[in-house]
Length: 346
Image (tube, rainbow, N blue to C red; front, side, top):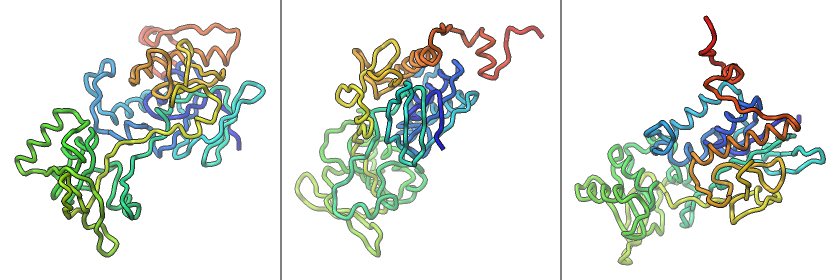
């Protein structure tokens, strides 16, 4: 059955979720599609415990906490989520609407589309060692969903960026042992994290080795260790239960690149009045878009979502003026939000 919608949002990260809110304030109900199994985008998938310091009025907010707050904020507008599926087809129709089809076979006719897919679909940069795929999800991991799964284990962490250092510093204590392996003494992580890692090594609470994993060891189908070729060319055998690989992510636009949208490298070009693409009715907000002066910040994406919502409301109601109403004083907004009017007489 084809789903008819006023707005379909592609991407359930923070900007996609806030887009739901801004559309809801204008009485536009949204469907939201995401390839991940849960809302949250990078915040949930990559760094749920990472602190964010530049959300207005929140001096510090965990990434997953931000998603939880956004989910609570959009509850009054009852969006429909279609998770674990990717939009594979997006085709303009003669009447100005859009036909969408997902990898799960769901079909939509949408009057407007908002792409809020970050910088596309992320794929982890994988460890290039023969036979590594056999252990993925069991003893080799490219992301961490449940840290407790690694408690009491002999861990080897690979990488030199923030994710590798952050998880190493988080897991060294509950782990049986932890070895961080990076190809050089130069790190891409925060200097404070690097300094703390070295201090813990000096205190014999974790270990660091310069080198690359060049082989795996197993017994009875189970990963038992890795071969690390050091910067000195010497091969060392290291016991481990779990191998945690943080080589970074490779962004891919995927099907978005085939939808006839004007691109600047891997970002979608938009105007700064409606955050609309070269295809009328298709908007893009957040990291996936580009315009002169673009800054890849969550708070910038929130601003873009607000202006896109007003543009969509105007397009859905041609010839009618879209009035700006304040959530603090507008009874209409209070009704849509499901809150009591603070100015109503008792």
